[in-house]
Image (tube, rainbow, N blue to C red; front, side, top):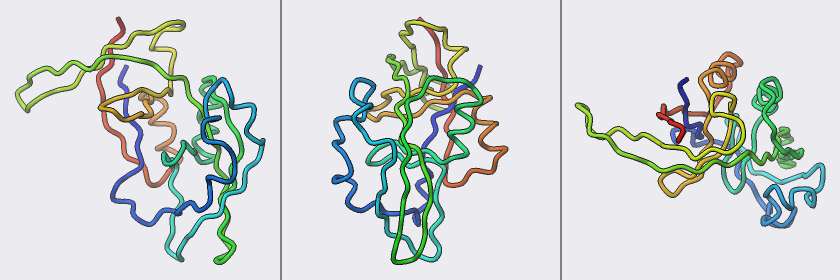
Length: 176
């Protein structure tokens, strides 16, 4: 099965700018062990313009997914911890609901193969529990950056729902 790295699109400049998110809760609580300490609903101020488009995924300072992406996660049945986050711009009268999620995190090693077109990255995963083919969304550390990895079926499902502001990059995954 094919897998993709799901990232916000860098060409997407006019997303909401989060303000004062440090006061909402302790950022060290965004993990499986302490997630229960975060309030069920969080309201975070944002700065928007009249042209602001809210992307399907916000990765900084923490992972936020739109209602559409959350519904696809539920449809596929992956175990994900989630809390409500409402982004509010009171100056422009704009509001959008997101979900702060904590995904399962897998570890792996990156191998580079020489290819006709240059170097091709292949990731060898060390997996415990259910096999890779039963996982549709998870986190991985790749090139010193934590990335969201999704299956082909998951990617097709969110693209059919016309999500905005994302970029998909194909990745080759192998189980060890």
